[in-house]
Length: 320
Ligand code: AVJ
Image 1 (cartoon, protein in one colour):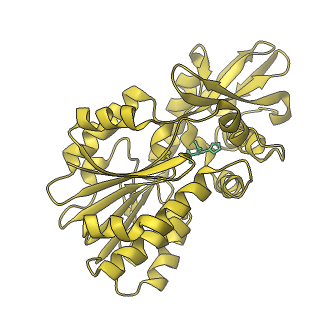
Image 2 (tube, protein in one colour; image 1 turned 90 degrees about the horizontal axis):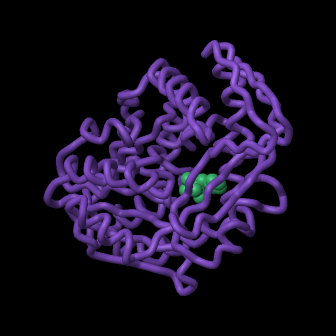
């Protein structure tokens, strides 16, 4: 495995967290970007979420990859797999195995904001694929796409409906920057969660075991540790709502009573009214009729669409 190429240091991350929290807790309504969920505990809780009965996306996407990874590999004939938001491994392995069998694969580039997470995931994959160069990159896909390794035929994969965490304006910017960073011979693989019965969507983000609630509140513990804040997680209720117009799930934390929260590192004290909500995540759900034109607007052509029988989730390929 090659040493991690860092476009993002721990200092950059700390500065980005401060800026996001300062801005997000001053705005009305209050909001935080979902990327701050994923410290060690948050990543472990997310892994737990993926195993919940109610959380269908991971199972649905894994089944799609089991079925269609060989077709993805045949269409891409990529020598490089570049994975944005490097996942836990199983789905990555399905892609790596299919590309290896296709005979084209030379290099795997996992990209993630968290260096620690990358190190571990990359090491395990490198051990299982000794013939492949594993070249991890610590970067933020909203800022550093132009710095990603170039050359060869690259399959750029963003799985898990991670793209759903971007709101439409962010998505247009991301897809435009990605298009600019890609060239002939490159292929984009996206995993997207689909619009479906709102009851099932809400259930996937409000499980009876309370794992998602713990995941949601975990961001408050991240702020307590990183910014010397004094959030009391139990003073906030976990809320998941479906917005039928925007077609996204919103996760929020609702203050159970009026309170003031101090953030020592920012020299801020933030008032919450009773019932006031802090938005912590938007998770957009897609339709082919919507993502197709979004891709086209960014300069991509949608070439393949693989859905499951239940129309829960889809894998798509697009070319610049
Ligand atoms: C990994 C960001 C796609 O939005 O479904 C799971 C994160 N949040 N449960 C999603 C998540 C609450 C997940 N993404």
